[in-house]
Image (cartoon, rainbow, N blue to C red; front, side, top):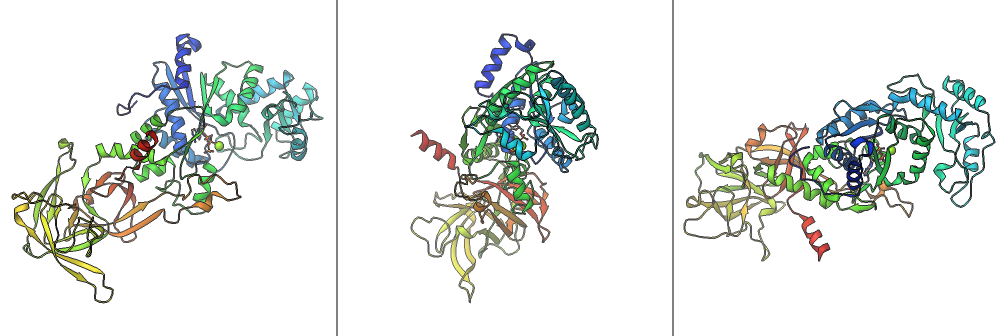
Length: 567
Ligand code: ATP
Ligand code: MG
């Protein structure tokens, strides 16, 4: 595993596995798997599962983690999704080596296992209509009723199942059901369907199969076929565990993996199910699966998150058996922490205000030296051109400042980062609107580098760029995609899309950045001093300028939150 990730703390799953290793269960092997259904892009919840499964395997010499596509449900987009999933797992820093599998690899074997169940009298072909099946199933309060087809003979079942497989029946005519217990208090055990008829082509097996196995049947058997030792899944599968074990107990399988459940990750101010994320994509509420506001791995990558920041976040949230909501501020803390160490510093002005330095020679340009990182001299430095006309941030100037405003205002002196002290002498306003369009200043040539030899103090240091040298860029500022902490909660009949934050994206088209940023590439991350961390986007603006995404602001709300919680 990547050396940057700190040693991970223990959790109840690791404790179970360590104990199994000690007792030499499974011959000291640890085999896990990450089993995504390729029906969308991976989200940050999947990252938790990936870090857990690949992380545990990585801790043991005889540890392996498979990537297995749960492709039992044929759909057209599968190929795009599979490629995206592979790219995301790799990007996170994990490697399945030669262990890339598909549930569809096992269709022949799964079919043979179904035949074995029929032969053992443990499965039957049921021909109830979907409505009747539901009615016979009972409720949580009432037991179900046996299907009239439950006592079909083994031979009749074998014949009907073979004909289902041959494509002789329309969809819905029959299903193959496990023969367990219609009176079980656990609804999953009331003779669940294990195969259904679907006349749909599969991207890997084509038209070979008119029947497809159900998740509960395919999953435990795929685990067993692959020799998985510990099958880690989220809590909603707890009630499926008796079925997982029942199926494996009936059949002659290579091994019987242990299913262990853990709490899924829920993150505040977002939704996490692929089905819901798909709605956002389809309705063009976002700009695709990798929109930087999406909680997808691809979205975080485009936003400027690093793999280490996501892995560290997953370590911090830990693994528990109780569902909870994690504050998105903790994720922001993780990326801030990582980029604070790694991101080179630059100057960029996102809402420019022109400043003319009246006593600076008209045609002079100076090259000022500035380190790329305050704590890492080994990262080197860059030169900043300085000239008579510069831009500063609009917010850094006030004509009539309140008492606590220490930045530029008439008569006030401030420092320009790495450059000089300047003092505001005059304000130029638009004649009709009254808006300040330029500020005239004088500079003190004695303060080069940003220090006054006479010990004079200023209360503010501003970022700036030279107007003649700056590059123009588009900057996209992101805010939470939802305005409600838990948009999933729909007790009043509301839909999660009702809580979309209308201000989740602000586009600034005329930003001025230090010239060195012209040479950067998509995916590169920087700190724009005093503003936040930004990442160059893959796109170019409609006016042909580079685009930068704000990854996160500099302000850390998490430390405050956790201090409050600890207090
Ligand atoms: P979704 O509802 O988002 O589609 P899923 O559970 O159906 O989620 P799968 O592709 O089946 O998605 O999941 C692959 C693995 O990732 C499973 O083992 C699942 O338990 C795990 N997983 C999915 N969502 C989360 C989450 N929010 N937190 C932790 N693990 C998750
Ligand atoms: Mg799913």
